[in-house]
Structures are given as C-alpha cells and as structure tokens.
Length: 408
Image (cartoon, rainbow, N blue to C red; front, side, top):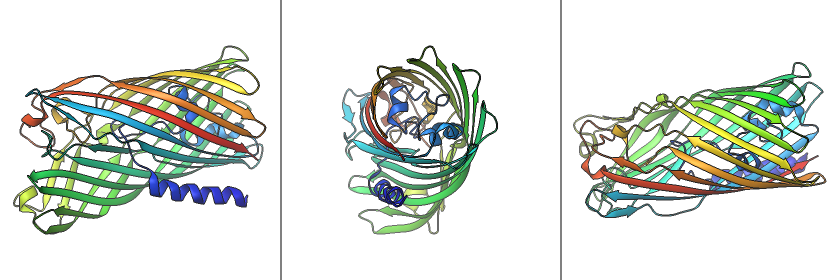
C-alpha cells in the first residue's frame, strides 16, 4: 500500500507539472485511458478496468482486489487557416501530454472504492503574432486537474450503482495583440466542485448496459491578472466559467467468448458556456473601453457524440481493439474564433492490450479528422463581424496512448 500511495503522489506531481491541455471537443478531453481510446472511447457499458472510475464508476464493483493504472496520452494537433486574401496561417505544432491515474479497491462483496486523477478539459492554440487573426487570439491555453473519489455499491448480482465528487482545478492563459508589439495577456486560476454518478446493469451473460453522469462545475477564477505589454498596465481581474454537464449511455455485447462490441452515446450541455465576463478592479480603457467589465458572447450549443468499438481476445495474453467516433462541435459559426477553431470531427482508432500475471499494458492510436470549416462574418465574442476570421479552417489530430496497470 505504501508503494501505491507513493505512485499516487509522484503521478499527481507529474500531472500538475507537465499536463498540457490540447485541441479537443470544444475544450473537453474525453479520452482518459488507452484501452478505451482504442475502442473509440466506447467504454461506458464495458467499464472493466480501473479507468471505469472516469467512464462509469459503477463498473468498479466487478474489479477484485486492489488495482492501479497510470497512463499518458500524447496529442499532436495540426491547425491551419486559409485566409480570404489567399494566404495561410498555421498554428505552431506542439505535442501535448495528457496523464491519468486510477486506483480501485474492493472493500467487500458489495462495496468498492475508486479514485481518479485526470485532466478532463483543456485547449492549446498558438498562432503567430503576425497572423491575420492576431487581434482575436494568439496564444491560448487552458489546463485542468480533476481529483475524483468514488464509492460503488453492488445492489444485486446484476445491478451496481456509484456516486462520486469532483474537485477541478483550472489554469488559463489567453493572449491577443492590441497593436503591433502590444500584447494583452490574461492569466488566471481557480477551482470548483461537482458530482458524478454511474449505473451498470447486467441484462444477461452477453449484454451489459451503463449510464454515467457528471455535473456541471462552476470555476471561480479569482486569482487572475490582465497585463498590457509595452504600456506597463497590470490589473487584478475576476471571472468564472461553468464546465458542462455530461451524460453517457453505453451498451456492451459479447457476441462470443472472444469478441465484445460496444456502443456509446453522449450528450454534453455546452450551453453552460454562453458568455465570458471579465471584471477588473480598475479601468483598462484600451481593452474594454470606459468600463471595468468585459463581456464576450460565446453562445455554445449542446452536442451529441456517438462512439462504437470492439475488442477481440486473440489469446490469453493479447487483445486487439478498434473503434470509431463522431463528435459534434459546440461552436456556432457566428461565434467562431481562433482560440478554439473547432468543427465536427470523425475519428478511427486501433490498439492492443497485453497481460502477463498481474501486469497489463495497453497501447492505442486515434486519428481525428475535423471537417473543413469556412467562416464568413463571425462576430467572435463581440457584436460586429471580424473580417480577419474569414476563410477556411483545416484541422487534424493524432493521439497515441499507453497505460500500465497492476493488480495487487
């Protein structure tokens, strides 16, 4: 148990120090496990490894003993903007690491505990200070850490339920150009609390159904500053952001002893991100005019995500996996901006799992292709069209995951 606690501490420090948010669904990061990602993220009905804490915590009642898993998903996005004038801007290409840690313990035949440490929301875009849209956004980054303890209870041989709490810590940095060599930068951090719940029902030996819900979380960003370079202006600011409710339904069907097929459907209440209101203790006339409040309208819409995947037991040690995902963008065309150059996307995934004794290693790869998106007269966060945003945006992302799990 001391080794388990030590691993938790080390991984938590690693997440705090190195987790970089990345280009995702809006700014959500749904993939938190290599085995699940290999099946397109369709895992709510199956939920049979420690990452069930994230996907559907009711599934941890089926895990015997004490288990721990630690993993990382590397994300490499490629973003470009073909401007209406015929030139092209390309966002700086960086790889980002998304670590995760899970542990479960079966206390009795009916009660199990689980703990997850994940980075469930984030974004990172980095456009040149000379790009056509530099006055809208240049560097944008949001990072989160979610600490999520859960307790699960087996009501019967076929039905389990779980509840948990979420403590989410958020850090954000947003930059844009006010004029050549004049940069406006907003830095802040805050935290908030939420809750989650899960249900897993075993219909028969072949079919399992799962339901998972995560509540919205209001993050109060009260430790923040706004700075204007070259002018010596710096002010404390306050804002808040409400992360969305998420509900997922999943079905897992064993067609044989070797093949399992999964399907998930998710609904995300992105309408919680309707506007961003920033308040300053003193007036920053250059950025918000003769007022101490800046309001940027977002008007994001609620979205659906569909996932399908499968797992084939090749041998006692090896598993093969594949999946597909279709994900709607929450960003309406009239509020499109380069900090989140989002569009509907499709993804295909493959992966494998290897078990030897008490150790399991899972590896996966996911390719996301975003639909080309042509923007004309977006208002961004304001009330007037921003001509510099016009043009066609093209994006893709490569994700590679590795998870190591140990059963005590």
